[in-house]
Image 1: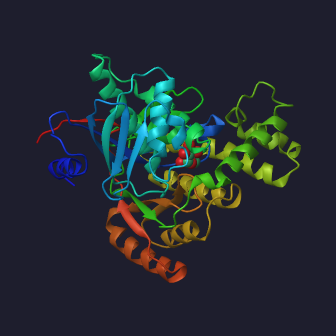
Image 2: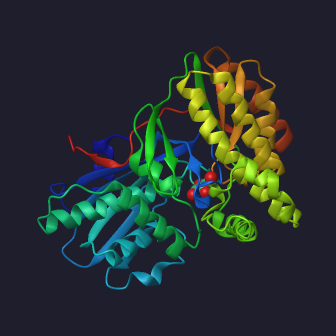
Length: 397
Ligand code: GLA
């Protein structure tokens, strides 16, 4: 929807004039490789998409935050003085969690009306929640700063960390930092090689000569609140606590190298825990190798690493499932596909595929058909354009 329509729709819900309206946007992300490594202090390699959440925002004179999504038509009204009471909202809890965490961190948050235009498919593994969180964070901080006459630039890494806290404390998903960081810090045509241990990062140009990243959406909705995500995280912590007997200085699983693991895996007598650890240790190395390969323009090697990543998430981390595996298996049958893997947390959601431009039509047609036949409903496909991270958008109408 264009700006003018969005503003008209905002005024339709909230009334009043467009005078003080400001617009903020923040994208979803696709992770190229490095899955379930972030909360293990490891490396990830995400890129921001052009699919984003956009917020039309306007300050209010009282202490209320009112939220509406232009496609859901459910209005949520919250009292800024008591933000702890909205945790169980079906829609609105991410936003109010961010408001709560911003207040706790000392930001001046003022009453406002916010309308959400969410273009990242919800619950699809493309970080629709991080897009909402980061867009909300910059909207709330910007309106508060304006009201209090502050002109300091927003610290986007801080916005990512605060949004992650909202997810932990308000939504109950003990996520890592990847999604919020990518949504906040993304850069057009670049992927972010991020070290989740100290948040140092490098923007790596994504040059895919003759190839594209195609996203396949299983359209199987999942919610990480269901507990499997937190369970995986706890299994990694258990693995680390066992290996710490041999490697006392290891703070995270990421501090265990492939050769450390191979030399000491017999310490992990529980097979499930061993498999989880093996995935994380090797996946971390695959991120490093992928960045090297991409920098050299070696797409074959990168594609091979993508394939290994998926196989490991399927066999060792066990977070794929029939829908994701079908999309990946069918993708690999198409000539011109160098790599196919799930992206994000798993349990449904999306795949990312490295596909020769000349094979994209055939890819979408054949993979889509085979998926529908096997799973019973349609998959959707998007060519992923890599866009910029969260920001204010100039109001031009
Ligand atoms: C979700 C989480 C991230 C990350 C991925 C898996 O997207 O929000 O922090 O753990 O799963 O890589």
